[in-house]
Image (cartoon, one colour):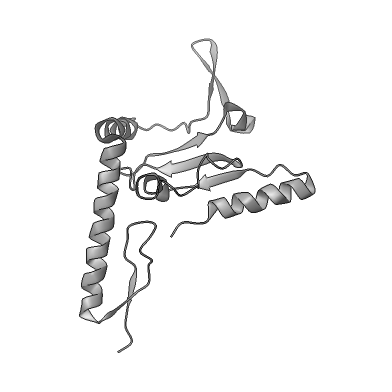
Length: 167
């Protein structure tokens, strides 16, 4: 299941009006950011909501890249806090950056770019539909044994959470 970001947005809009606050929303879409756009395109959780200012996604989950890739997208340049920008002197010129600087290869970035270009919207939609279908087959198989309680819902992240029945 996904958190109800639209409801949070609507409540915050009212609270901001009542108090004069300017409270934005950051969406931690670690797994769901690669699922919701393809399986639930009508679900409002993203920049369609006025208070959503940034979204992070993990490409190493449903983005189909091996571990170590994730990113944050801001609605506008003005929404990127100045405190997150590091200014480094590179070859005598100021270079602003908001990346994490570690000695690490760029293979995950290249792999994510490749997957995005290779699959595109339709390809990712097909992959996510297949994941959902596989989860439903697994759920049905577990239910048929009579030995498991299914804990997860059918909507949201395509997974099956279950527990053993007491008997």
